[in-house]
Length: 341
Image 1 (tube, rainbow, N blue to C red):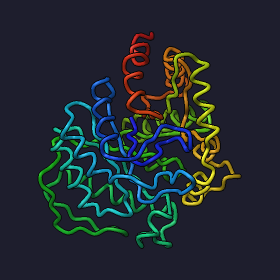
Image 2 (image 1 turned 90 degrees about the horizontal axis):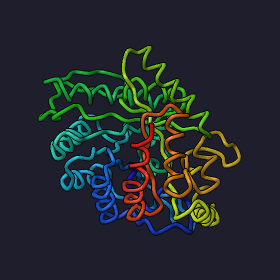
Image 3 (image 1 turned 90 degrees about the vertical axis):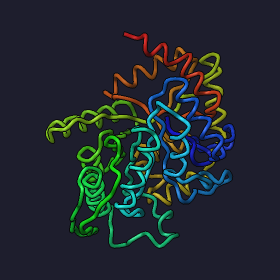
Image 4 (image 1 turned 45 degrees about the horizontal axis):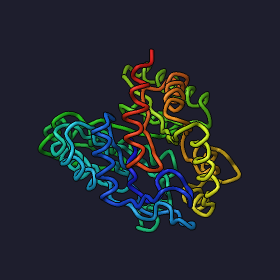
């Protein structure tokens, strides 16, 4: 499950239930996710919102700090936090995630972001014009290499183009090697994600495009001689009937915050008219991810079909209302998925 760490969540609309990005909603959502049998909770790192009428993502908690609080309150669900390679020193990052792993009793994970939203980092003087898209992944590769080594080597020497560490130590080690997650979908980002991560988040404009990306990731991992799991994001819009769920989805679409979408695309460097990636295409309709809509049984059928048709190993779920949606997922949808042949 993707935690609502920033206000507005993953539906860019004036008509959704209030998600304030605050501690109480995130804490309660994580506890519900654990109680209802979900496998992991993840929070993104966000430093600046996108404006619009809703001020979308303008208020958010820091990922690692918040996940440490959640780790102390949970006992089973995996705890995945996000760090940006261009912002966090790799030695500091290694210790942050090792600390999270100790707090959680070996449940920590690190979502690696090379840095996509220029506006976030420019405001704090952390955007380097000399680092183009591929160079940011070159930096992230050095960053990840240092972290991995610090997690299992007593002392590390590394001299690269972007980082130098000398006789570097980091104790204690994690209780287990934390999960590594990444979502790069460009050619360079995709190669980095499959090479360095355990779980690769992928996407596409439709199920066919998502399947192609999933199979391509698995083929590349096989050539590299390593395992990989492919996950996708999925928003669940449910109702007492299919018609009721469709009416809810229509209400969310009608409330599309165009200003926030334009702010997101401007920060990302994409064009609203270009339609050059899945997020752009979906954001035009308020939903930023693959979306299933219907009564619980219909949602279960659509989720099962999406997993199978797109050759996915898992999903990261999103809800408009987490307090209501997680119990529906756990009690009405998951049992149907588990019972399916």
